[in-house]
Length: 360
Image (tube, rainbow, N blue to C red):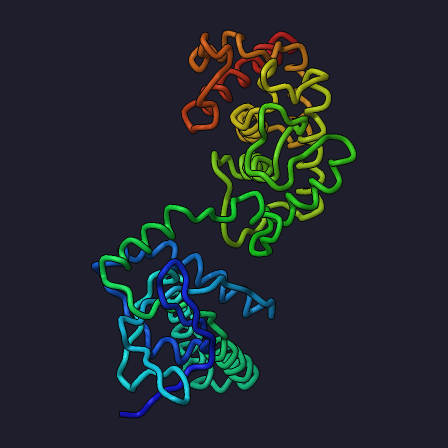
């Protein structure tokens, strides 16, 4: 049988023989196998998200990176005087990296399908670009950590350990480098400008009770999505604004600056005030969106109506938060779910409408 020699290094880790190597994607796709007795079922949405990430970066000629994939050789990798090798027809069983592998394979299939279409209509420029993208992806280097002699039982344990102990990069860090949608880009731009006026947590997805930051990048994005789309959670993937870009930036900035006028001076103190909590901030954005839709106000006019809330207590014990208040903790809990945000928004709207009726 023909031998496929592998460049790499061998070592022993925790009593297991491991071979560390690198193969291009095209070679890897011909070698790897998925054992359903070890792996969980493929998540189509996760595959779609990773594939979109890959294709978007290829389209914009941005480099992208993946951590090492983990495989089990089940004795298929052998050694002779020339080094470590696989015989033709051998397979490597993937333990960590199934979604990334399948996403890259799916991306390749889409590119090749697009190439066929481009060749059919004789779009020379598109054909050249697609061929370059296909070659780049086929040659993409995959770093592999291969366990040489694990049993299936040990593979299951390895899979469990990797997925239990892994600490994925959280949404706050991801948002700092996400170039795929306009809301993420806008959020970063706004945070940079607003940091001269308020403290914003740029790294963590949530703010600790002891922090002096008033909000996070993640919550700001949720607020922007609520402000313009009336959504309770942030939009993902590619976004196109229904307003001119400059106007969107001005509206969003005005909304966050309004906090400085209506919140108490120590608004970041979460043990004293609710103003630093996700649910309250998103509810305010939804309130503005509601006013623009039901009262026919411009965004600037709707944001100005928030001034009515300036004299609101903003404390945990205020009656509008009674359904969330836990006396033992002297605070409100569960404020960031859809039901809670909706009720808080409705309370804000009621207060504003009552004041508007008095003035009229």
